[in-house]
Each structure stands twice: as C-alpha cells, then as structure tokens.
Amino acid sequence: MTRHTSPNSKRQRIRDLILSEAKVEDIVDEVKTTKEYVYKERGKLKQEGLLVTHQSLSVLNGKNKITVVKNQPHLMDNVDPERTVPIDPVNDYDISRLNKNELMLMYNDFEDQKGPAYVTAKHGIHPEISQKEFERFSKMKSRDTYLLQVKLAAGISNASAEIQSIVNKSSSTLLTNDEIMAIIDNKMWNYACSFTRNVVINPANYLPQGLERVRCRICKEQQAGVIYDRNTIVGSYAQQVLNYMCPSCRALQNDLAAQLSQSSPTNQTS
Image (tube, rainbow, N blue to C red; front, side, top):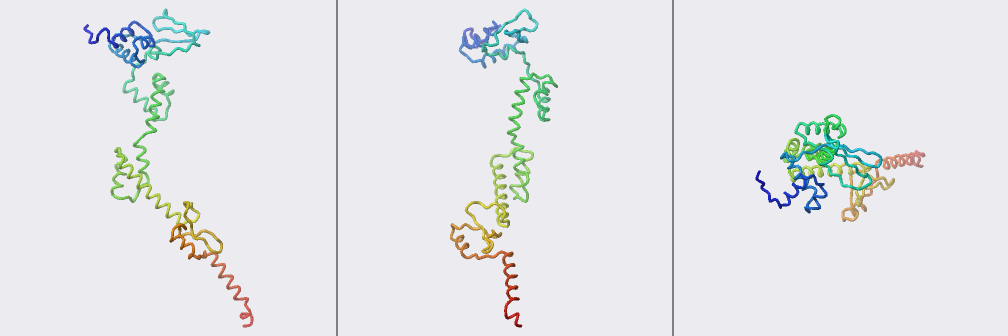
C-alpha cells in the first residue's frame, strides 16, 4: 500500500510509535507534539482498522494497582498508586461513539430533568460521556436564547404595531439584537411610566432620591399628587407657595371652629 506521508514526517513517526504500543507521554516527548494530536492519530488508525484497542480493568491489591487487559489476562501491570502518573483515557476504556438515537435518548432524559447517573443506568452510556454531556446540556440550557426572548416578550400588551410584530415573531424565530433591544426599551418605558404613576398617586411608594412630596402644613404627612425637586426653580417655588392642608386636618379644623362658634359668648347670649 502506498503511503501518502513521508516516513520521516512527524505524523508518520507518531503513527509508528502508536502501532508499537508506545505510551502517549513517550510519544509526546519524543516527537515534540501534543497529547491531543496523538489521540487524533490514534483515532484515525482505529478507524482505518490498523489499531485494535482492548478494554482493561484496574483494581487495587494492597498497595499496588493491578491492570488486567480484557481477553489477554496474561498482560498485567502493577502500578504504585502513590505515584503521580498521567492517565491515558484512550487506554483505560474502548469508548465507542454515540449514535443519533443514543444522543436523542440521553438529551430527552436531560430535558425530563434526569441526571447523568440515570442515563448511564437506563441506557448503558459510559458515565464519563453522560457526565460531560450533562455539563454541556446545562450550559446550553443556561444560554437558551429562545427562552430568554420569550420571557422578555411576556406581558407586553397594547404595544405599537412594530413592537407587537416582534413579540409575535419571538415565539418561533430567533430575534436580532436590534429586535431584542426594541423589546427591552419598550418594557423599560412601560415600567418607567407605571412606576411614575404609582409614585405620584401613592405616598407610601418609594420616592427616588432628590425628589420630594408636598406635606400637610399641620400633620407633616406626605401627600399624593405632586412631586418636585427643591433644587430646581419651579421646585423651590412650589416648596414656598404650597401651603397645603390635608383633608383630615381640614376636617379637624372645621370641627374645632364649629365647637368654638357654639361656645362663644354671642351664641350663649342669644
């Protein structure tokens, strides 16, 4: 078979070392490459049928870690567990690619709020894959653009024709940045209008710093209907001119005046 790669090329050297069962770390050091590139070439050799991998099982036996290769029990390797040795994930297990149906089953379970342990137990998917895919799924769900724009459009009513068309579009089509900003601007404007209205008519509502309400000159309670800024000319004038008496104080004043009128000497003489 004619090789398209020079025998002295880095790629061919890596492939030859892989076929000679050299360790990944040794290949990286000898060829001056990366683990990722070695794994890539390893995968290609496997697809081409030139490399056969075996499953292995590692167990602890006292202080030693014993690795047994499946179908080849005579190949055993004793490893001191206290040594810090990088793990080659390709050599640990022969992990096959997921097909379309397995991916659909796994992500359907994730959508049903099932975790990676459930996926492994039910479908036999390798735990490392189910865990990694669950992390990917969680990240994707946390950045669900469609869900975000639906939430932004929720509650918008009596909007202009332009905004309403964007709201209608948001349930089925990905909006542009300008369309999302148009929805946000509309919600902010409606919120500002509602907030201002509620602040003016209800003295119990929070008043932004720097603004003041008219107070009753008798009881000093804040009154609804007028908000001003004393640092402006109009606000300063309003503070001086508005000599307001609330309805409660006015009613008390009228009752007091009536009582005084009834007890005055003129009424007693008559």
